[in-house]
Each structure stands twice: as C-alpha cells, then as structure tokens.
Image (tube, rainbow, N blue to C red):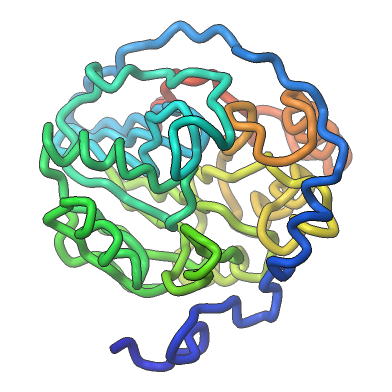
Length: 316
C-alpha cells in the first residue's frame, strides 16, 4: 500500500495546490459547449527518424504528445499513441485527424518508454502491446499505473513518485510534478498519479510537461533541476477555461511556463490531432504566436514543428 504523501491521501492522488478540476457532474455542461468544426483529415507525409551519431541528441515530434528522443546508445518514446481513436472503444471517441509523423514500422529500436499518465490520448494500450511484442522496452511511469500496464501484458514497469529518478533507465530520468488528474473510467479517478519528465541526454536537459494546468511547479522544477535546454509544452485542448484551466494550459500560460523554466527553447505539443475540446484546429498555433508577441519572446524560442520533424540539440 502506498504511503500518505503531500499529493496522496491514502486512496487517491491530488494536486497539493487545490487545483483539482471540475467534478464529474459538470461534464454534461462541457458537452453542450459549441465546438469549432475540424477537418476530417489533415494530410501528413511521414518521415524516417535520423540516426544520431556519438554525442548527438535528436528529438522527433511523432504527433499529439508522442516524442522520440534519440542518442547514439538509446531511443526513448514518450506517451506513444498510434491508435485511430483516443478512446476505450474503436467505434467512438475522439478520432485522429492528423496521422503520426513517423510510421510505427519506421521506429528505431525502442530502449525505454515514458508514460506520463493514464488518459487514453497518452496511455494507449494497443500501442504499448505492439511495442512490447516488438522491443520489450521497460516503461517508467508515475505511481499507480503499474497495475493497468501489467494487466495489458507489459512485463517491465517501474513506478516512481514526483522528484524520484528512475533506477532502470539508461539515462537520468526524473518524474516531475504536473497539475492534472487521472482516470480510465467513471470509477477510478485519481487512483494513479500523473507527471512530467526531466530527461538528461548528451549533456542536455529535456523537459516533457505531460498534461498540465499552469502552476508554480514550473518554477520549482527550474529551481530544483536547473534551466531546461528544450521544453515540450502542451498548448491545446484548453477551452472552455471554466472547465479546463486547472488541468490544461492555454498558449499564454504555456509561454509563462517556458519563462518559468528558463527554457532555452520550447516546442508546442498536444494540439491539432484529436479534437478533445471546442477550440478550432488552428487556434492554438495562432494564440501561441500572439502570446509570444505580447510577452516579447522571440518566435524561434518557442515554436511548433511539423509531425515527423526532428530537432537536433547542440547544433546551434
């Protein structure tokens, strides 16, 4: 049994600052919010990830919140999601309109999977089973997620708490706080923890925020872990604010998180793939550009990339 900690009461996890989102009975009101119309499909030309040499670090945006991080000795896949729907069923739920930028068959040998939390658009059991059959990678994930993963046939699972460093990973990987929640059904809310990851690779610090609302945890991460070379920050699925503010940042808040982290560069994620909330498909990118101008942050410091596009660290 897990011990009581400042974000766990003995039964459920929670955000210690009290920003724990709206109750379940408010969801019908959310569903009545008018939704922008998304295109049924966005054309994507998949790319093959590069082969980094000694001392090189490559970060490839696979799509939504899935990233591939490569160094010469290891390849890490974060929140792998290759299904057509972010849903417990194949016939309903948010449908993918933008394909992955890297085909599953073009992935390099995956040494490690990082799983930030158990929501369907981040924790896709079908994809995890495919990875298990092909690569048998260990999975590092927050506390409470191991039972679900093992029930799906995943053999190597390491569960860690906020600020703990994974013991089995080839690279230093620390779980960081996020302001979010967990659930796979109506009956298991917050029975598993959520978080982000700080990955140290090739002398660079890469921060993956996971799903999160804006909070003081970004400043705490910078204070404890040092400045970030590359931050991967969510910028989508943020409307309406009365429902989403606690759990998803909008682009303006993502810019503030970028500043709090003292990030050298940031890349936006978690937009334009699944219509999870009412805003239009292009709105997060437009609002990010506006927020950067308003705060006087150069556009090259915080940008979006195409799915399948790779960023090389240390090539400036």
